[in-house]
Length: 235
Image (tube, rainbow, N blue to C red; front, top):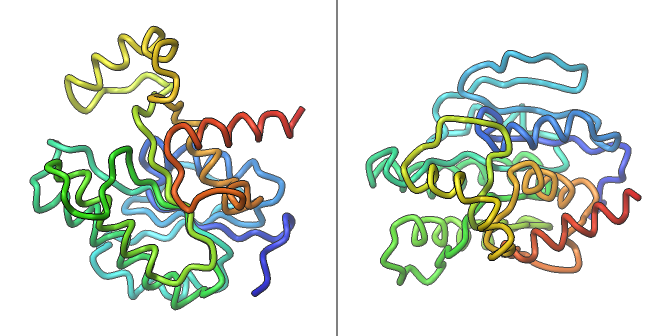
């Protein structure tokens, strides 16, 4: 299997209209090692870039129509998701479990050598024993992806993701966490990660194999360590 070199990476990003996915797309477009970035979106993004290719796809329960767009890709960053409480439990499971598994099926069939970065969450439970639906569903997705046959799979389990830019928070808990973030970061540094840092690590894992010495599962502490290593390498 040939690992893509730094001057030829063709990257797919799913969830580019979201917080982490948006940062991932911007980071990829600015990355000198990324040849092209294909954003799979439900609605077209209001941006243009020489590297950017947008593919509108509304039904992630069936990604068969994406086979051509996913052919010849070197890697994918999957950030599509939903907040607990924002949708029904049935829809949360569909988005959290069915969508990434279906996308991974078509990606692997179209580009069997592609690497895959998956946005999971802290507490994800592949055993299915957790009482928290989100943890069970993320764990179920992780388990399926680990068995999907990707040559390089990176599972990111962030804790609280700090939005960086102002936004309308999805629920009361997130409003509280944003308000106390400065103190929370100092007291519990391994329980927080900036959205842009998380996005950077997910892209670099695929592009520069930044996660080769660890994983395939990266907890919040591991993600922070990867970000610090990347910063030292840039100095």
